[in-house]
Image 1 (cartoon, rainbow, N blue to C red):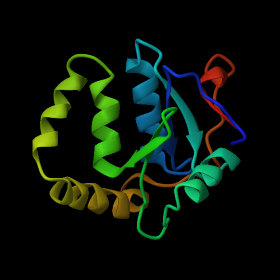
Image 2: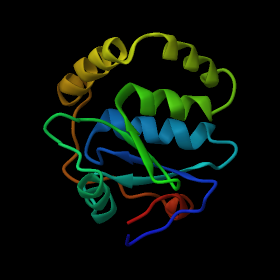
Image 3: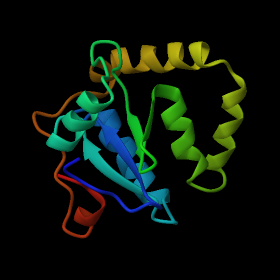
Length: 139
């Protein structure tokens, strides 16, 4: 593997050209009081490496991915809810949605993902973090 993240961190892989995804990353950064999360765009080398390593079909998974140093990866609604669990109150209350079966949660997630460019727009290039946020992003 060409990168390492500390054991106590989690890596969020996101669509770097999606306005909704970029806004979500900004939201997580603002509420990540315990400094748990790091970020990488799915389009960059690290994102592509993990997609290949975990044999993720990008035609079927149009999603955020949450990678942990214990060599696990989750996607779609499960990834979003696991992120919310670590953001503290009141965001952590979102974990109540784990009681909904994944096929239902992911249907809603997929519907939003399918329409995100139409509803929220798309950038021409991946977001460039400010110098003070650069340490949270992997290139």
